[in-house]
Image 1 (cartoon, rainbow, N blue to C red):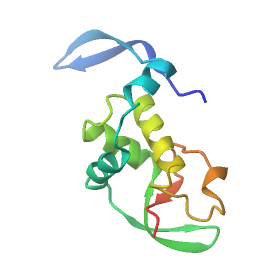
Image 2 (image 1 turned 90 degrees about the horizontal axis):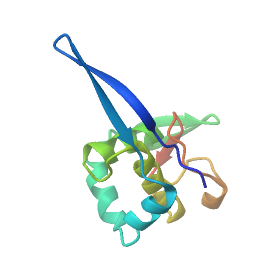
Image 3 (image 1 turned 180 degrees about the vertical axis):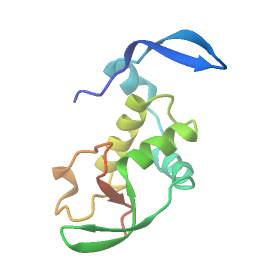
Image 4 (image 1 turned 120 degrees about the vertical axis):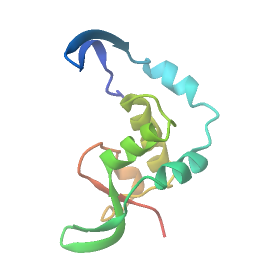
Length: 125
């Protein structure tokens, strides 16, 4: 699976000055290695503290206590569980694969892939 990677140069502006900042993302293999012995349950518990759960409709069915994909990615980064979006996407995909999060309205968890969009997710009951 391909993970989004950021590579290149960006500009930061602070108090009227502009600085150039270089950033390079880890490769897919480096991310695999970094999270080889990772405790996904513990990471999710920490990230969950930063997420606001609320009801959302999926295919005209209302699901309680959901969060959006981008909220999970932001929480993983904010809690310093991950350093960048590509790592957070990797962790979120593993949470979905291990059934620690689910996509409401999907019949089989294996049929879905994590997306960092407005897709709702929930914790299994």
